[in-house]
Length: 407
Ligand code: KDG
Ligand code: MG
Picture (cartoon, protein in one colour):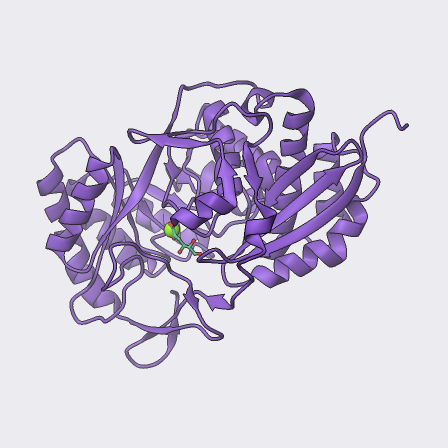
């Protein structure tokens, strides 16, 4: 018998209980199972292949306790580093190994990360209405569920489709099933005419206490972003998210110079290096990196540690395309990280809660990861097998003249 446990299998489960999820299952010689989320919305099979063909064979025979060494091995060992496919794959391995370490020691992961620094994790959810009255109803419905922080998105007069809002349903799921993406038309001027008034109406309706958030979803130029930040100043947002694509990070200085509306960026970033100048130049207030897409618990903690030095706080990504395994991991980080601020919690369809049985829970505006050993989520593989992968894509967006723009 070897002196340490050994990884004997690494399998990828792709399931679609209403939407696609990719999950890594690592099994050890001693019979422990660790789960990691590897879902990359609209590019799911690329991560599944990366894991199956290039990562799983490298894991066999390794010591599952060596989480950081495995992270370094996969990151540095690939030579072709960073990027969403690579970092989501590494993130899935990292989550599964933390899950195993928790199960080996009988401890929830947050205990292994130093223990709780708070009792519960503040969460925000989404309110969505095609017009302002519908949006107010949606905000009220989320307040009735106990939420103390709500992201408000509304339709724009003259546009048929808008990010974050569905015309028909109260809920919203961005990825549409089918073999090609839906094409949407986008008009920034119409959005800028409408959004400040709609958000001001929400603030008037709810009063000063409710935390309000809004996502501009990467669509604005620096100057448009600065104008929006100014126009929303009186609304007193908790944060304004993704005002620009943030590939060109210098331009955020211009936005910062013109508004004190708090800015949140980072859901599409995959490493600390993409966050570095936004944090160290204090161009953002919240960093939004996701526990899966940014290389797992081990790497999200590095981002949080850098951010802490610069008084930037963590507000991790948590839409419906981040599985309950990743949400659990994010909550363990949230419970144990001093500069954590808020967790996005979009919620899941009932079937997703059956496929992923989880110990984490929501009550009264807060989430808690639970005290089960490891991450506290188990995938029901038999149920998952009943829902095979279905092609689904995020929409793409074009301006009125037909040219492509950021969705
Ligand atoms: O897959 C893309 C979604 O996760 C993203 O559009 C959601 O912007 C988003 C958010 O803030 O939740
Ligand atoms: Mg977003």
